[in-house]
Amino acid sequence: MKHQLDFEKPIIELQSKLDELREHPEKHSLGISFEEEIQIIEKKLEETRRQIFLNLTPWQRVQLARHPRRPYTLDYINEAFTDFQELHGDRLFAEDRAMVGGLARLGEHRVVVIGTQKGRDTKENILRNFGSAHPEGYRKALRLMRLANKFGLPIITLIDTAGAYPGVAAEERHIAEAIAVNLREMMLLEVPIIAAVIGEGGSGGALGIGVADRVLILENAYYSVISPEGCAAILWKDRKAAAEAAAALRITAKDLLELGLVDEIIPEPLGGAHTDMAGTAANLRQHLLKQLAELEQLSTEDRLKMRYAKFRAHGHFIEKEPTPGERAEAAKAAKPAA
Image (cartoon, rainbow, N blue to C red; front, top):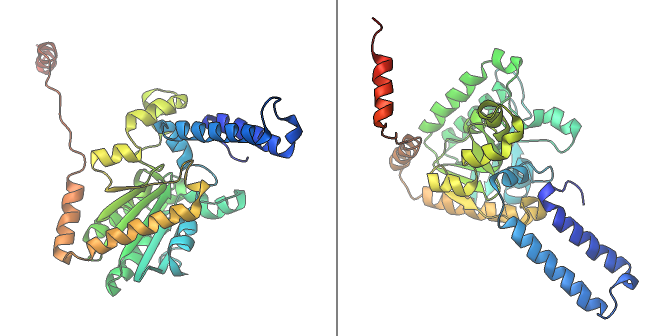
C-alpha cells in the first residue's frame, strides 16, 4: 500500500497478512478452517482500524490532512459540483494556478466556487506552486467574488494550503496587501459565502479566502495561524517538537468547533477522505446545500450583521490575575531609577 503513515503500521501488517493468506491458502494455521482464520483476521483488522482512527492525536490528524492521496479542490469540484467553468487571471499581472475558481452549479444553485489547489506529482506541484498562492491568486479570487456579488451568486471557497507563498516575488507584488484587501472586501460582499477547510488551513493563505457566513471543516483537516513545525521551531527551538505544538495550538476540527472558530464538522470515512473520495464529496455537498439553504432565508442586512459579529467574536481571551509576588515585581520594574 502506497503512502502509508507511521501510525497505520499495525493496519498495514494485518492487511498484508490477510492478502497473503488469500493468495496462499495452504499457509493457514492447522486446526482451524481457512474461512474461520480469514474472519478472525478481518475482525481484528476492523477493530485495529477503529481503535487507531477513532483516537487520533492532533499531529496524526495533521498528517492525514497532508496525505498525498487526499482529495484536493478540483477533485471536490468535479464530484460535488456540476457544470464547472474555470475562469483565469487577475486582470492585473498573471494567472496563478495555485488558486482555481469559476462558475458552477451546486444542486439547483448557480454559484462561484474558488479554492487553493495542490499538485499530485512534482510536475503538477511546480505548476500549482504546492498550493501556495501568489498575490495574483488572491486578486483573481477577489475578481471572481466581485463577479459573484454583481450577479447575485453565492460564493463557495475550498481551503487547502500550507499558506500563501512567502517568497521574494510575492513580497514584491504585495502579498500581505492582497490578503488584507480580500479580508476587507469579503466582509462586505452581499451574497452568501461558505468556506470549507478540506485539508490544510494555513495562516493568512487560508484566511485570504476564508471570511464567510459559515466556516465548515472536514473531520481530519486543520486550521491554524502557523504550522506545527513553525510553532515548534519558535517555541521549542526544534521542529521535531511538531507533535507537541499541534496539541498546544488546538488546530483540529473538534477544538476549533469548541472555540467557535468553525460552524460545523463534516465527517470523513474511517481512515480519512482519501479512502472514499466519492463519499466524502457527497458529505461535503450535503453540508454545503444545507448551509446555503439556511443563509438564503436571511435578508442581506441580517446576513452582513451576523458575518460581522461572527468575526468580531474571535480572539477573546482572559488574563490571569497576578499573584502578590508578580505585582511586587511589576511595581519594582515600573519604579524609575534614582
